[in-house]
Image 1 (tube, one colour):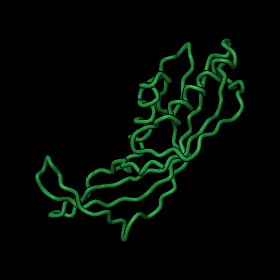
Image 2 (image 1 turned 60 degrees about the vertical axis):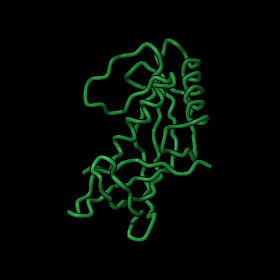
Image 3 (image 1 turned 90 degrees about the vertical axis):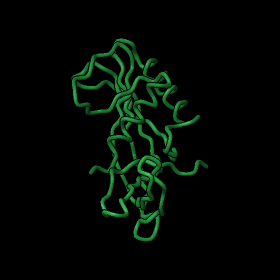
Image 4 (image 1 turned 120 degrees about the horizontal axis):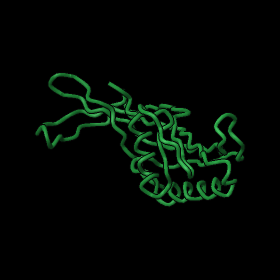
Length: 168
């Protein structure tokens, strides 16, 4: 069983890529292709967990596929995601700034499903030592729910999934 956090990173990278901001998870399973343009690398920098109900019990839900009721347990989480922007050094800082503008627009206007954006920040653009690329560190803080369904008959948990919070 996992906490579902790797799925969150993949979902955020997919969401950004779908909105014209090239993105990938920071540590992919396979080799990453070199790019001529900017790339946002999505990583987990922090996770703060808070209880969301008595003994983390959220209630019951009906499983349409299985045709039965399951119990739901979960926690509220505050995720800090690294969204570092890398771009070829020869292109200059304008490409990095344009990439951050597109990243901010994608997160501020709508955001990935199930994640409520609380903070977005970035640092200064600097040359990244050995890669001959420019790097601007950026991060976003999100609020969300991670929940797992339990088999009421067998008492077994299924895998954790991300569930959203009410957008404010």
